[in-house]
Image (cartoon, rainbow, N blue to C red; front, side, top):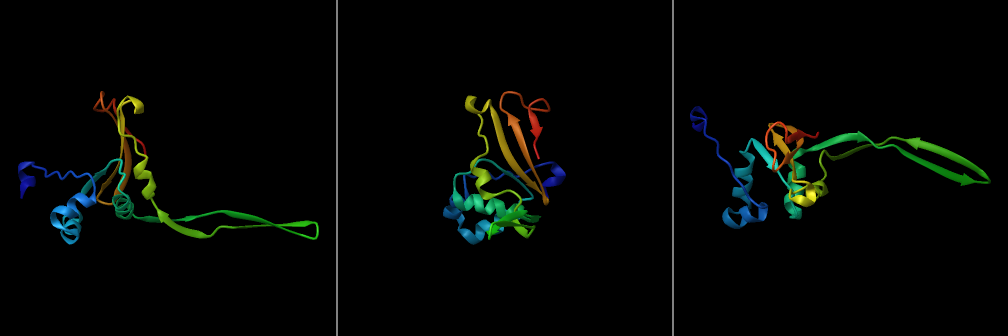
Length: 137
């Protein structure tokens, strides 16, 4: 209803625990599942990092593995490439995003999720706009 008036609703929170304390876990899941665009900044709350990684999803990748076995003075080399499934953005990555300030050269990093598309972006706190915004991945 509000789209025709060009109105957006923005929900900001520190982490999932804050929402859970206010409305409970089930209501939190219902609420967050209705948000189309999610901007995820640095996060130190483990459950929130894991939730963010789950929202972005997993991908299957080949993981090359080489081994060498020694026997009777000879080496036997083998290589295989098992398919592994891992998060597109690891949960630990959310703890390492830059938060601005002089120590980060005023760069703020985020991971954005919009309608299934994921990208990582950086913003310069003192140079907003096209000159200060960089799409990283």
